[in-house]
Length: 172
Image (cartoon, rainbow, N blue to C red; front, side):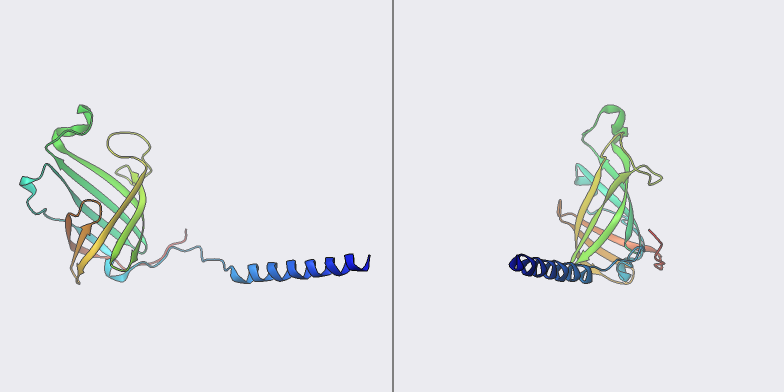
């Protein structure tokens, strides 16, 4: 009987120690968006595409990056119809996405969802729906320009800064 109480106390002590260690390791993150990367903050346009006239399709990017969030307008030009005729729109169409980004080393990782033009969630319609996942290698960056290379198709995306944005983190 005495052994039972000794074991019970040892188990209770071990459980208390584990609970204390677990609770002290956890910290509540603030309910505010992250600051993101300072050099990315702004409105960025891809004004031209190298060899565009020789490509069967290409996409121009327009990014708005504020704090740790991004909004992207994708304008696709295509000589080949990948969609239903009602969606092909003579080979020019726009898609939109929003989400958050992280920079890991020399890689920009965008994770979000496809949206309507007003950046509200898109669940049906022409073109892509659901998750927007894209990764770019940051080849170079300066005060007013950013050269990315898509890790999906290895195409370069030369962006020009159109407007600088100062990050003011918002509550989530």
